[in-house]
Length: 387
Image (cartoon, rainbow, N blue to C red; front, side, top):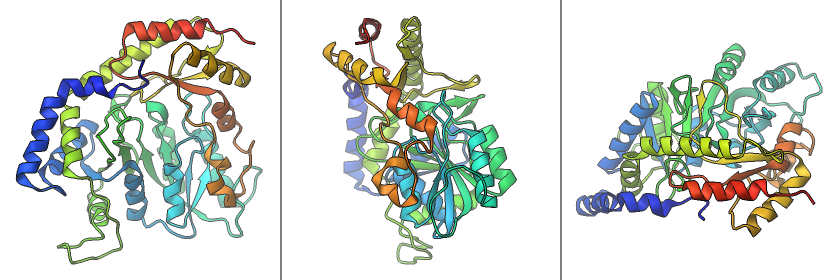
């Protein structure tokens, strides 16, 4: 049983991928070839954003967004500690300060109520919420909200809070490309949205890749410049300090081919999630994923919570013995990572994140998972007995 089955997907489109790669070998434009424009336009149209900007990774997408917003020393970006390190890493790379906000226990996404309380505490310098232990509290400039496991965050509330306090919003949609919120696609929220095309994502390439989305023409122009070393009118006219953040033509070609079957794969993921929900409905050992009304997850992962933290390791061992592969995202929240030790956070500062980190685990999930495999996974979970 495969946790993610990329071979089944490749079998469907391999001839098309090989034909597209041959075209690139023939035209020889390996960097910034015509495939880049094609995938940028296609994915922007699909997401409902005016502009799409391909880049080298999801991390670079976040970095480009913050660079374009002029983030640097003395600035603070509010984000969640229950995510992959890239979300906060890019903040620290720019010598700004990540300020963590706890999550909603059901969606795993940023809790808007906790967000506003944290902003107010930063603005007043008062309150008992955990804040970075710095000599001078940085000034809040923006928010990076994360669409964890494929479900879009609560942008109606997050964007309203941001507008009230004069902050910009970045949608970290690394796991939610293809998801929906009230008919609006992921990657169309905030000032800039960023996604990843790492191979395991809902839409992935065969290496690293990412994309930024925005409706702001000026932001798009700045990010395009930053993507190519701060390029101005030509490659030797540099108007700002940028990065080498380009996606290559080969990866763009893979994405074009994969995108041709992506809507169908989203439907297959949804059916697989619904089947898991049905099969596991009777379990008192696990909590199945919660999806907010009006949302449709992209199901980057199908993530359960053990009903009690002390049961998770027993469950994982039991599933391993039954031949079921699993993964834990994320066992150590960012506020407890050594990389952010200088912020002075401690275990217990974000109790919901700490609790979820101790209880969550993900099951095999991909468009080509069979009913038989899902039934076997469910049977293994339902047969688990607490020791």
